[in-house]
Length: 228
Length: 231
Image (tube, rainbow over the protein chains, first blue to last red):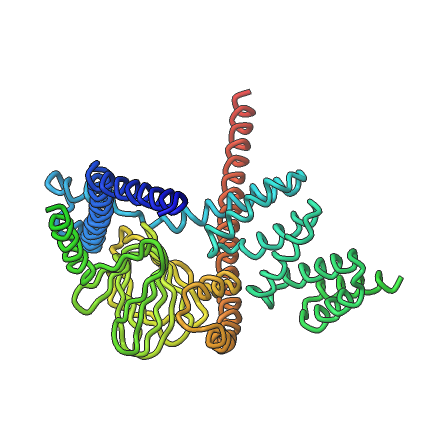
């Protein structure tokens, strides 16, 4: 055996010995066991959280069931001193006027948005209108909110956002008069971006689709403006 | 000894998960599919929990997509939702409310505390929240689905391939357009009624103010008259 072979063999044996040592150390130093324990503990926490969520759900379901029985129970047993516990229990149930309260909040939010818009505080106005659209979609002010949101974006020179809101309006309220006005605004945006043909097409669509006198006359005026 | 302990530990964990998974479905990190019956499946988004109690599936939290070809019933504390034959719907359960978006077919909804069943047409959404003091779950005004949001969510949970999704979407577009038109009319009608009641309220307030002013004028007249007589 020459020297180079002997050196190579020694090197290989050393590496193997080191690998073996590392493996044995890994097994016997207890880290692996801790890792397994840690993993187990994590799984246990997950299971407990899930169990807790289910327990909460069952309790919530029970409460909702009790709430459905409350009107009848109150009618029968809710009077006088003895009826106090029932009345107390019923007081935790959601009030019927929740809808009315929400309507009032929506109206206030709309007025606030309009106020900001009038003052030229467009970022604040946008926040108010967006909040109304997201949280009070049932409100009668929702179409006006969309319209004023688009206008706020336009006035704040955020043309892309304005176009996105107008497109949403066209999708959701295709026959509404305010959608007609918003489309005229869309035509104007195209006009500003030197896309005259598309702008004319939009004005024509408005003339064809919206019978309302104000919308039509506005569209006609916009088209005349383009001719000039 | 150690491998044996590990094996016992692992088998115990697997056994527990199996017992659990039989009743509760929780898609912790990725979407999960529950095959309810041969033609019906429920796709759970990340974080959604569905509990199976007898034949009824309870949506506990998160977003689920129902793709049904047989009759199936889903429940929350606020409502019972039944799909009679073939339907597709997105159901989003939050703590205090549930939102149902009907994408195809006939979905019947019965809110908690009421025997009446409502049919939600395709392309419409409905929010139902906690039981109120009248003993029924609060029902919001039905609205048409927002196109972009709905398609984005649907695409994420759709179980088929892109081609299949595109054809389904084309089919849905027709239903959605009809729903938008219906919702616009409904909304206009509702807004009209709200405005009318607001006008009536204003008229009443005006009348009350006028009556008060008249009474005050009368009092002033009497006062002057009295003073005059006293002079």
